[in-house]
Amino acid sequence: MRIAVPAEKPEERRVAMTPSVAVRLVEDRHTVVIESGAGAAAGFPDDQYREAGAEVTSDPYSGADLVAVVGPPTPDQASLIDEGGSLVGFLDPFDADELVKVLTNRNITSFAMEAIPRTTLAQSMDALSSQATAAGYHAVLLAAVATPRFFPMLTTAAGTIAPVKLLVLGAGVAGLQAIATARRLGASVSAYDIRPEVREQIESLGAKFVAAPVDESAAAATGYATEVSDETQRRQQEALGKVVADMDVVVTTAQIPGSPAPLLVSREMVERMRPGSVVVDVAAPTGGNCELTKPGETVTHGGVAILGPTDLASRVAIDASQMYSRNLASFLSRLTDENAGLTFDWDDQIVSDACVTHDGRVTHPVVRRSLGLEVEE
Ligand code: NAD
Image (tube, rainbow, N blue to C red; front, side, top):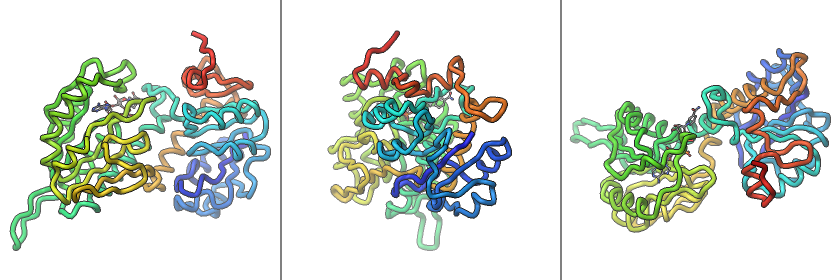
């Protein structure tokens, strides 16, 4: 099939396909077409794609069987995809009415990387996990730069410096990577998650599990957390308040799929922190875990810096692109027939779950619901 990779929005540094993945797809008899400059911000100049056997062009869309992206295209970009073509990427489909309208009007079959089921079978395609790994890692590096302290304990002729006290709230994929990174930098790390089963994972990374309410019922069958009651949230904040006040750095990563991020660090809690402390809110793109977070900005409140980065994975563009494009290639292998053509096996749950639009209609039940369309049970 002819796979096209257009340039992303200017603020996105990642690219959907790296030259090393392009080589593999070309070996598998696909044609790879990349928009000139698409890989530049991720450190992959056009020449590397040419060497990989890809075509470099200013018009990647025409004639493409499938367009591969990192972030959702604008409705105008989606209009450039050939009618009846296909699209794969993070499409943010639960919040993209206009885009979905263009995709159905143009009869485009679209697949959202974020809708791929997070099963063992689909692990190699799990771009949510690979990009959360990049985000959790970089969040700690941002904290290390923002804090006016050393992370590790230092024993020097000028005396001993205590290690930074760092708390990670939410210990999913990003949180566990944040713990591991902070430990490598020598911080004294504690962590907390509403799901009790995470305790063991936190401790196995050498961090201390913070005693705050956990909720057996917060762990959905999918492994994700669900929303907790107001009462649990109140008890959580009460318990975390004392812990947070004693921290030099807090990295928050708690998310609930399909809902705004839970509020874990209130304004009062920030006001009890020492000046010079830092909060890095990895959940900023979905509203943030800290009441004072402003997505995409750094706010200073009473000497405490609250960072709300929304482009963490993009800041690790080379490796995040490498991981993303491997995830993507793994998914594409399920859309490929024995003659390297495009095929849809709707009996394959990974393919059917990830599909957002096909044949001029919205197929994904959650997207249908968000658009007010009838959902077949
Ligand atoms: P996520 O980004 O949705 O959430 C991050 C963390 O926030 C989760 O650990 C969640 O429990 C926590 N959280 C939510 N509300 C909270 C609250 N009020 N207080 C404290 N913490 C709160 O999740 P994720 O990192 O994408 O994945 C979560 C889990 O999904 C993983 O730990 C794993 O169990 C499962 N998972 C499974 C697979 C697989 O089987 N292939 C792949 C990826 C993830």
